[in-house]
Length: 413
Image (cartoon, rainbow, N blue to C red):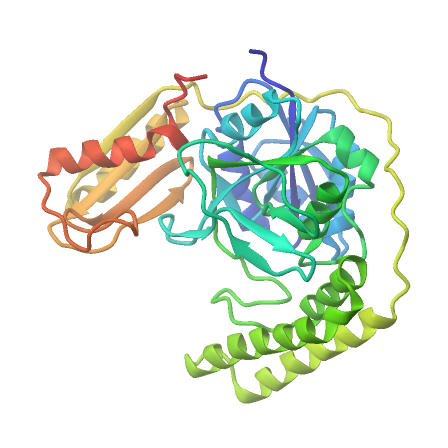
C-alpha cells in the first residue's frame, strides 16, 4: 500500500539545543514519504543551518509566544496529505511516522495519536485518554499492541497529545486549524473537541512513540518547577466558555485552582520553589482566569492557502539495525562505535548493563543512537517484576525484542 505523504511540523522558540535533538531524530525516521517543517525563531534557524539542514527542511520564521498560531503557520506551509506534530523537546522513535501514518489507510480516520514516554525513556507520560466538556482527561483502557479506532459519546472526545499526533491536512484547513485564543495549553484538546463534534473518528496508535523531555520555557525551569500559570488559567477558562455548560464552570474552575495549588506546594516541599514564587504563580493563574473570562473570542474560519511543492526529506537511516551491548566500563567505546555506525545510516541501540537491579533509562544521543542503561536484573518496563534473574545474552535479546516494533522491525509494513 502506498505510503501517504506526511508533513511533520515542529514549533520551536528559544530552544535551539532541544530542536537539534528533535531534528536529529526526525532526520533518521524510517518512512519513505515525508517532509519536515520547522516554525521557529532566529536561534532555531541558526541551529538548522548549523546542522546542515538548510534547504532540506522548510523553515517558517516565527517568533511569537503563541503555539496555536505557530502550528497554523506550519499547516499552511505543509504539502502532505497528513500533518503530524511533535514538540521541539521531544524525539521520535525511528518507526514513529510509519505507525502513525499507517492508521490513515482507514478512510474513516481523520486524526491519530500515539503514546508519549517521559524523560527516562521508559515510563509513559501519556497513553490513551479521553476528555470531557470541562477539559478533564480520563485514562482509557485499550489493547496496547494494536490500533484502536474510537468514536466518543456526546460531550467527550479522544485526547491526542500535541507532541505526538497527526491529522488529515484537509480536515485541519476546514476546521480552521488550532484556535489562536490558546497561546499554550489545551490547544490540541480544543481541536479534539471540535473534531469530535464534527463526527471525525480518532485512532490511538500505541506503537507510534516519542520521548518527551519538558525543556525549560517562560513557564517552567529545567527541573520542571513552575514559574508562570497565566496561560493555564487563561486556556482553562477559554475551553470552558467554548465547550462546557455554564452551570459546570464554577466546579471546574475550583478543581483547576486546587490542582495547580497542590502542584506548586509539592514543588515547594521538594525545594524547587520559594513561598513567594508559589504566591506569584497562583496570582498569575487568577489573572489568566479573569482576563480570559472577559476576552472576545474570535470566530474560527477555514484556513486558506496555496499548497506548496512537497519538499521530500531523504532520511539518513538506511533501515539496518544493530545492537551493541556491554558492561559499564565498555560504555565509552561502545558509544564511539554507535556514533560511527549511525553516521553510516544504521539504527543503533546500545545496551549497557551493570550487575545490579537498577531501573533502566533510555537516552537519545547524537549523532542519532539509542543508549539504554540499567541493571542486568532491573526493570526496563514499569510493569515488570522489581527484580528478575537474567543471563547477559538473554537480557540483551529481551530488550531488543521489547524495542523492535517501535525502532526497527517494520516487516508487517
